[in-house]
Length: 200
Image (cartoon, rainbow, N blue to C red; front, side, top):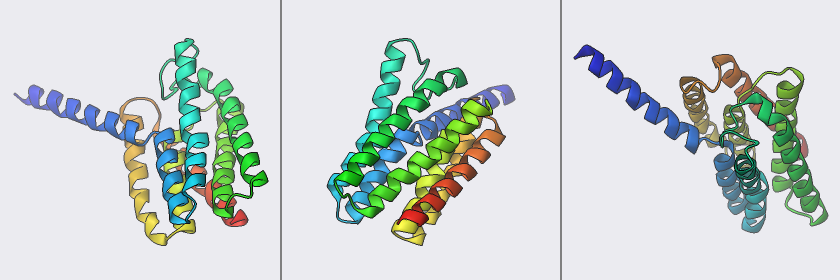
């Protein structure tokens, strides 16, 4: 009976971890927060644009890579598959940011995109130079929370409670170590926070 309970509990934790990993996926968080910021500052169109650049297009690139057997899964758990993907995502972000600047998008949306780009650069350096698979999940979760707190209200800091939960899910599923999720969260929060504050 004891063994059955333990197995059942483990299975339940696995389901919760998978749910948190999917809900807390970078592309999901980027889409949701872009729309929240855009609507909150009265620029829903730009919110949609940033959501496409930071969430929809990146996931389409990943799915294309999976279809071509270049990427194993939609969370890109293999570090060897992340190098080229990061380069492509940096290019997408730069194009999106350039369009925003040329079209005179609201400064908050430009700062949001720039902050995300800066965080991606930091993640790229850690991943490709140090060859360490830092968690993008926790980086994005903590980063966008700090940006929303700066842009809209300090009450958004309460959402930081979600970051350790997402981090736990990544460790529980064996995709990251505790160190990788902690460093990811700190790097994401610090980089995006400083970048956004300097621009906006």
